[in-house]
Amino acid sequence: MNARIEKIFRLPLYQRLLLLVVLLALIGAGFYFLFYAPQLEESARLQQDIEQREVQLLKDRRIARDLPKYRAEYEALQAQLEEALVELPNEKEIPSLLTNISNLAKEQGLEILLFKPIPEINKGFYAEVPVDMRLLGTYHDVAMFFYQVGRLPRIVNISNVQMENARKEGKSLLNVNCRATTFRFVENPPENKGR
Image (tube, rainbow, N blue to C red; front, side):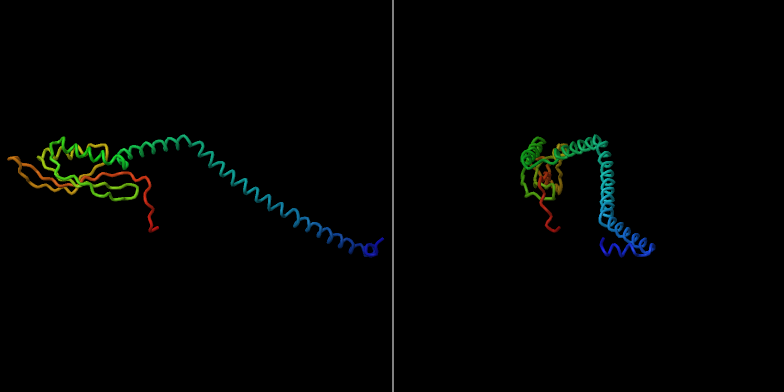
């Protein structure tokens, strides 16, 4: 037998028991730090991952349960957007809208002395399209023209109204200077460079 092992067997019983306890403690510590502790950490990490996934699953189930409500809200918002876009023409529809305004003036018996489109003013997702106008007609014709413009399906604001008396062929007429402003939807608004 090995001399070292024989030396251990010759030790008193309490020393051999103490040596056995120390040896078992070293084996237990090695097992704990090399195998058991990493498994505990992995188990805790997996348990936390399971809890997070369960929370996410509950949220997803709530969303899935409310999906018909969200779809209905989405469809309602889409309908509102389409209604708003009817009032905000795109660039292709602006000339026909301006022609409609001009025709309304003629239909009300007004003489158009000036119809001058001004460069549009970009306001982000929409742009103002102003037109300076000078009209000649009776008070009633001017009022009916403004009324008819207000009834258009598109948004058209009349501003900067100035009226002066004018006479033509013995009739009392008004010389009206005003600005008609319509709006158009800008599909790709420019980025704010200050941000």
